[in-house]
Image (cartoon, rainbow over all chains, first blue to last red; front, side, top):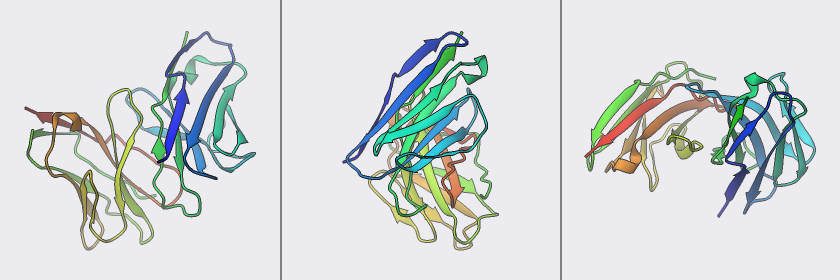
Length: 114
Length: 108
């Protein structure tokens, strides 16, 4: 069966520091991959999605970037974190081939910026 | 993507069926209805999805009205572990737009 892993589970970073969050998927090939952010008490905001290695689409202009160096690896990065980058970051995957396949989420990374 | 409306909160007795409604009156013909739930501090968990027909899996049943303007998620025998926020989402593209959802509390 397919599994998705995110780490770390929690992270506390100072303003201006860099960020790297990693997500990997097992048990499937060529998945669609997604990064979302969930602010406290609010819905999910799609940040990036990828349909293949090196292919990244950005949904919202921001202080963050994403990369997909391998088929089942998705990385969320920042060179300099802002206070507004705090939130719950979720990685998700879906099977490729059709937009109707459900997305499956990891357990997220709770990021606090001090 | 169509907007969905869900009650803010609901209670259910343990062992009874939980029926969670969702209105999506502006749904278009190619939009699917998805249900997820989120337990505090965890990622959303996929439950079920459907287009026109009613669907059932090991977790729940999804009943979609004939005009597709509303749906109901049914948890047949709710347990305390089903306490969570339940989200109804209507989409055709990749962006899963989660709203506020329904906070379901299963009580002993």
